[in-house]
Amino acid sequence: MAHWFHRNPLKATAPVSFNFYGVAGSPAANKICNDLRTTRARLLEMFTDITCNPEIMKNATDAYFSLLQGFIMPLDGTTQENKMRFIQNFKWTDTLQGNTPSAQQDAVFELVSMAFNVAIWYTKFASRMAGKENVSETEAKDVHRSLKVAAGIFKNLKDVHIPRLITPAEKGRDLEPRVIDAYIIQCQAEAQEVTIARAIELKHNATIIAALAFETANFYQKADHTLNTLEPECSSKWRKYLQLKQLFYMAYAYCYHGQTLLASDKCGEAIRSLQEAEKCYSRAESLCKEYRQTKGPGTTAKPSEQLFFLKLGGLIKMTLEKCQRENGFIYFHKVPAEPPQLDMKASYGLAEPVPFELPPLSEQCNPEVYTTFDLTKGAKNDKAKPKEEEVKPVKEPDLKPQKDTGCVLS
Image (cartoon, rainbow, N blue to C red; front, side, top):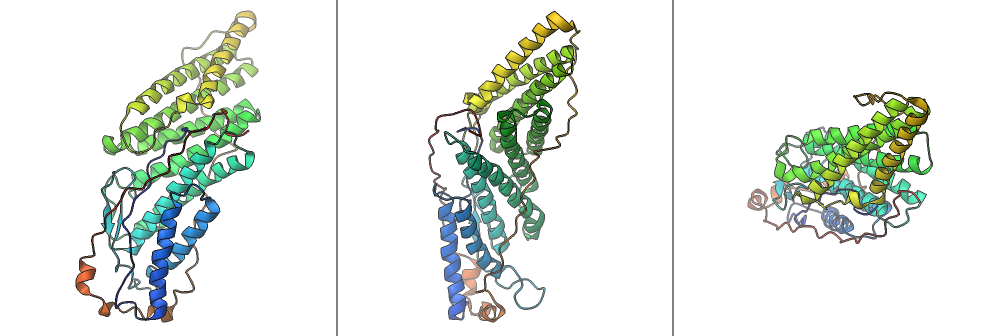
């Protein structure tokens, strides 16, 4: 399903040399600096390499973070701040703020910004896998897991690392709670979409599908509400996507709940549920048009052109007509004025974030080497006024859509 998911752009960053001149006072210290530069450059390359997969990404991430932690964790046997934490300036753009960077002279800022980009990469990898012409069961599992891994990274940053920043995130920036919460919830919702598609494909019980769809719609609504106080110019497009997905899955919930009601001989209520499904679906179609016309960051998804979207419209129409025929011949039930209350809890298929942990500290970063970093030997003027490096936008690969088979699983 190419163009099914909305994706905000990757964060861009200025080059970092890790050249500390007289500060790195031993060959081992110099090697750490050189390895930080090369592993960072390697990881940045992986973000736009279409041959990169989760295993390659994890290896590249671990290589850099195992070294970077040597500038964050206490290495002198005390609980005092690592003396190298504030030596290097880092610049990063934000996914919603165009090419205007934020800068902090703090290795924790670098850690959370880079890890944030890793999470964004996992969402883009999932989207790319889902856009393949014939998605195998293994590939669908990769999509599902990648979205949960991304959610786990975002959650770990929010709970553990972002609170350590000396300078709090500005409003509308990636590291502030509203934005990162929206990413966590969206990843969980999209992972559940994979589960719903599989349940439909395997013709699972309508009650299970309705409950999962309802929970997923609630996730999308929660993500949308999380962003409602952000500036419209940076959040409107993203919010339209979240709103259309919420209505789409409410349509699914009412459609399959209608099937459950019909099976329980509650034909009047079934008709009303299907009528509500029609309303939600129609509003989702309208929001698809509004979404395409709304300007803002990110790639434009085209959900209303996907077979998965179009099939639901046909299913609602067919099921409603069946209910109306049955009611005219057998049941003669009155159709309620109000739609049925969807107070359903899914027992299966809810997506939980995969817990994220940083890799162990590199063996290169030991107390002996740490003592050879001497901040008194550094050029104080250079430290106070770091060289200005330009932040160039990330050139992301242009992936052409493949033929849509209408399913997440083949």
